[in-house]
Length: 80
Image (cartoon, rainbow, N blue to C red; front, side, top):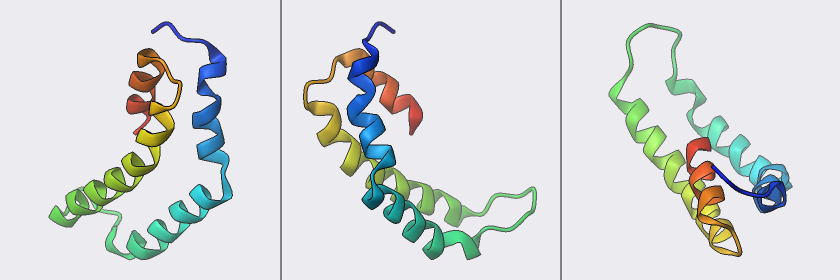
């Protein structure tokens, strides 16, 4: 992918923002009790993952649409 490192600044700002960190912690606090240290996956994991992806997308998409190249947007999708 071809992009300038400076194009990643909006994403880095998002990841390091206190509100984003708090959102992550709140989500973790809400769901961590569901997970168990076993080989088998639970169906509820899929629902939790979808919920997390929706939250992240609601934050990512506005950031990605503001002056970001398609290459950086595609790269950001790989991070989710």
